[in-house]
Length: 235
Image 1 (cartoon, rainbow, N blue to C red):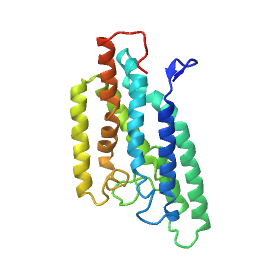
Image 2 (cartoon, rainbow, N blue to C red):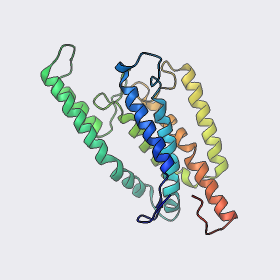
Image 3 (cartoon, one colour):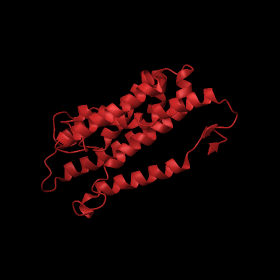
Image 4 (cartoon, helix red, strand yellow):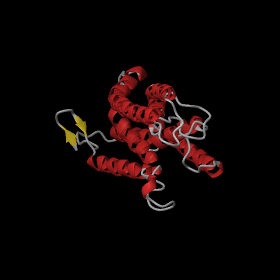
């Protein structure tokens, strides 16, 4: 669907899919409500679908602008302007909650206000806590997915938007193959890239998922438009 006010298309079906994914992730994090192995216990897989949907939408929206002169730096500024305010607001809420818990010191809580403040500052800057088997972002555990999104965005804008469809399809297939092999030998299965001990594997997961539709699909649309020029919109 086209938005006349913005001159852009809005994909309502994709919005619905993103809503379902968001609800799935929320329910996954309500792990105390569900028995192990039941529905929503694998809700983390919705993050990969988020990466895929984001890849398609960004490729559709920005490829022409990148071809006609939008720089990688300008692209990343646009992405940060969109993502950072909401992320910072959510992280500040998390910091406030953890600080309140640290000050009340209920049984079993070992963190201090100083530790919480330091971890919160790191989370605001998307700096991960390395080496830990726990979340790379203890104050805001879901921040790893935003880091993956930004890494994939930069790689796309810096190098891959102009690559051929054949190259991108090969890259995508190789990436999924590497993810499958790693998941088979990784102690956490497909749930990798979110911990301090394996955050280095996050780019593999994020870039591969985004590439699945972002670069092959938009390149194919571009080639189709050149072969069959028509005033009829492709979407």
